[in-house]
Each structure stands twice: as C-alpha cells, then as structure tokens.
Length: 149
Image 1 (tube, rainbow, N blue to C red):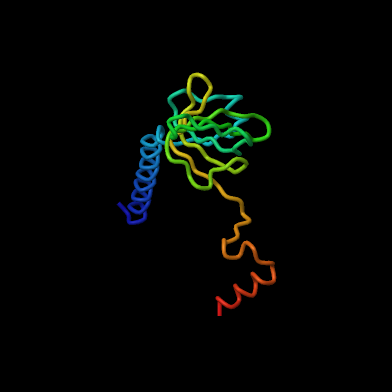
Image 2 (cartoon, helix red, strand yellow):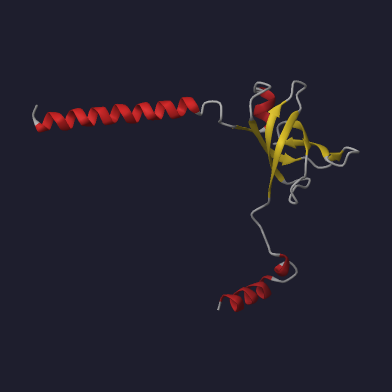
C-alpha cells in the first residue's frame, strides 16, 4: 500500500475513534445533566418528578417562611410571569434575602413544589465593599488610588 493511502486509512480510523469517544461520553452523561428552568418554563412544562433540575429566579418579597424546626424554609421564586413554591432544608447562604436572585438545585415534587437540595444566592453587580459603603464616590476613588500605589 502506498504511503498516501496509509495516511488516509489512519485519518479515517482516527476520525471514527474520535466520533465514537464523543458518542460514548454523551451516552454516559445523558442522565447527569442538570437542566436550568425559569419559573414560567417550569409551570408551563414541568419536568419529571425524579429529574435533577435547576430553578432560577428572584425570591419574591414577603415569601420567606421558616418552619418551627429552624432549618426548613419555604419561599416563592418568580420571574415576573410565574411563581414556583420552593422548600429547602439546610443552612441558607448569607446572600439569600427577599428580592435577590437565587438558583435552587433539586427536583420537582408531585404536588408542584420544588424541593431544593442546594441553594446558590446571587448578588447584584453593584458590589461595594463594607469599608467603602459610606463614602462618597470621590472619597472611594481616593482610597482606591492610595492603596493601588
């Protein structure tokens, strides 16, 4: 066989092996993917009860209620179009407050309540360190320029 044909055969074999590895990886990870939903999507098309999903939205004002056990909380996550009730048992992140963004990882219950296993609180993009919070813009810039020199 000519060297040109040998290279072509090796290239075809390598391509088949690469495609096979990709298909094998996709098949192995098919149940490990965690889909992201917003409340209006989860209300319109709820996922299966045992499927791991993520629910993202804003914690509705006045919706956080703590059970007497002190660990379980109930709250509503909304996106402006729909609200989804969520229950979570565990330690809440310090940034978790009403009106803030949240991503809840868990499963949809049979009664329409999202049962969260993990909460990820999100802060806004206007972060200001505590030390600079009470300063004016000019004072904050002066402090930053002093520390960066």
